[in-house]
Length: 80
Image (tube, rainbow, N blue to C red; front, side, top):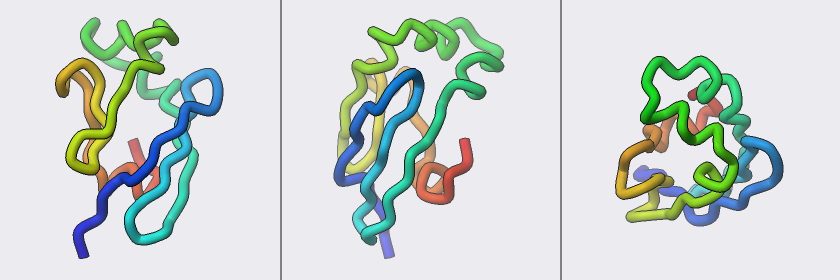
């Protein structure tokens, strides 16, 4: 089964609630990832205005034309 993100809703801080095509729903906190990111390209998303500016493209969540994205399966499992 191919899993995709059908909905992503910003909750607060660095939390996004995901609805997946198989009916699973998860809220993921990206704060640890962003605070511990090794590159400035990822760390710049600590700016909440930038963080909230994501889109869903082909069932995947992306920021700034794939500048930052995550494997769908990892999000589905709650691992980032």
